Amino acid sequence: MSTQPDEAVEAPFSGKTLFWGIFASLLAAAGFFLLSTYAPDFRQPEGGATPLSKGGTGYAGLVEWLKLTNGQAPPMERGEKDLASPLASTFLLVVTIAPGSDPAALDRLVKLRSGKDTLFVLPKWQTMPLPGREGWETKFERLPNSVVNDWLGRLARAKLGEGKPTVDKIDVQGRKIAVPDELQWVADDHPLIAAGDGRAVLTELDSEPFYILTDPDFLDNAALGDEQKAAAALDMIAMLEPAKGAVMFDLSMHGIGGNYDLAKLLVEPPFLALTLSVLVAAALAFLHGLGRFGPPRAEGRAIAFGKRALVDTTATLLKRAGRLQGLGDRYATLVRQRAGALLGAPHGLHGEALDRWLDSRDKGEAHGFTRRFKAANESNNLAAMHEAAEQLHDWTARRLGERR
Image (cartoon, rainbow, N blue to C red; front, top):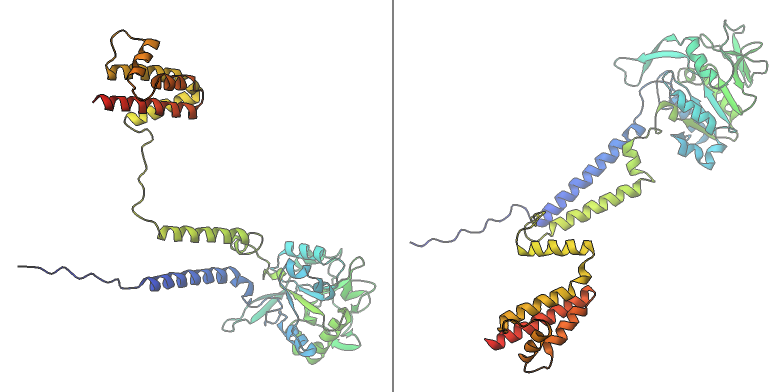
């Protein structure tokens, strides 16, 4: 009974399908890594005193108000790269401080903005998220003066004043607006915006073009709900900005865009070149592995067996000892004795007598053995000894073959 050979089983996927599948997987993994790395920089904060917040203490309303007024959205500063650009020095930078902002970030920002128009807005309210309303918040009490004074002390040698204002209306560029609840102010004899004699709401430092708005309820979203306060907010910004529409908002104080970690270092200069080099090396190693022929080579023994290993080890020891140059004459003497024994030289022949007898065995060449013996005896380097040894071996092998 005969049997038919089994048909070859076809692979479920072709090579091209596997290649593109692996390529798509790697591309998706790279995209996921990049999105995970930079996602926190573009995530919108919920509530808080940030230019992106739509809560009552946020400033998204002011950003939108300036966009409608100037025809374009004000730019957002996300870190030192944005501040270092030449265009940033021509803008009025609005720095909104929240209770949870980073003090070290404020110190760095003050140094980088030295000599440039900057408006600092102090915090005022403690808030909490409003349940059921994403992005909304509710205020429950005013921040302690000690907390606000910590931020104020990083900008100027001043503290918040105690007591209520003596006026009911505040003049902002000729526009009268109502005094906010629990007004924050500082003592200043030459205020830009005052809440009575010697009580400044907006003040300017003597040494730098830095402006401090002590009460955020002139610019935040809650203030813009009033028509007069919204118009006064634009008047205040217009009074401070160096050019019409040149306003920029800071995000680095709120941890947006300025955070660095290991993942960012890997994909940004100057370490981007190193990352690309490693990836290219890994790709080349992968491609090389795909084209390997045969099984992997087995690792040999550290100390090999056999006569060859013994000869190699002896040669290595002689080379390291510097004794190879003196082996030519000894090898020639050894070959003379061996050739005489193989060719049946008479007993008792030694030295030159044995050389003459060996020369007589060579009918095609005069003094054939003696000439080769002297060449080996006089050799003083590895190349000469190797050549002379080959000639002596060949001469002995021919004579021995003729005898047989």
